[in-house]
Length: 124
Image (cartoon, rainbow, N blue to C red):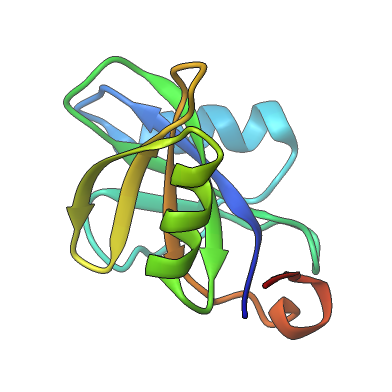
């Protein structure tokens, strides 16, 4: 048995100015921008408690929005999603990039939301 849930949305931006991109999305969505980042590739927006996170990310591919699914067992979740028709694209650091049968890319990441235990789906 493992668990998973929608973790958040990543706004992929092909840009040289992440702060400007984050400022736009902050104003567009009405969420304050966090002033700090764990690295130079992401800036988070402050979403309401319990909501999925929103992060703005610098990328070198076409701009798009993708979602993250968090799980307490990444490999089990990847296998579950493969059985549904998704395909594994690439393992990066601690997460796996996947593609839905309909072409959308998404990531399976380690659990991290404080409400994970109360809100995650349970899979046998």
